[in-house]
Length: 116
Image (tube, rainbow, N blue to C red; front, side):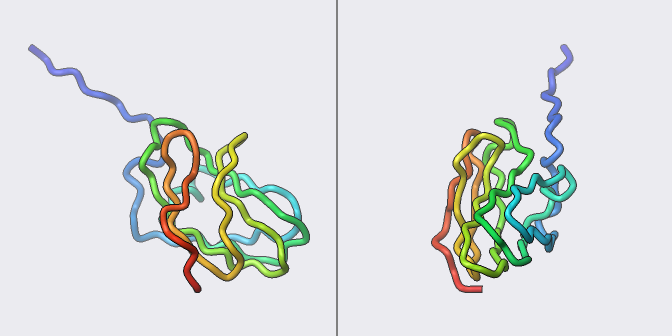
């Protein structure tokens, strides 16, 4: 009898855990990551913020358990939040980094902010 397999259509599964992305998010507009950008395990956001922003990840329920190291390397005193479209997300303090986990519904900050 043939066995049935589950086909994982998630773009983010199987990503290399040793990848790094540095991305400028300067300005005050929300930024949506591409699927390729979200493949990075560690993401450093840079640039001068002129307002609080959200960085929107292309995730779905099938990505539950995925984690990212997020570094807020921006300047100026505004908030950077990582989230899914329509979510509330996790705010990462300026000049800090944290591990965030996607639980299938929302991003959760798994570690306290640590100095960069």
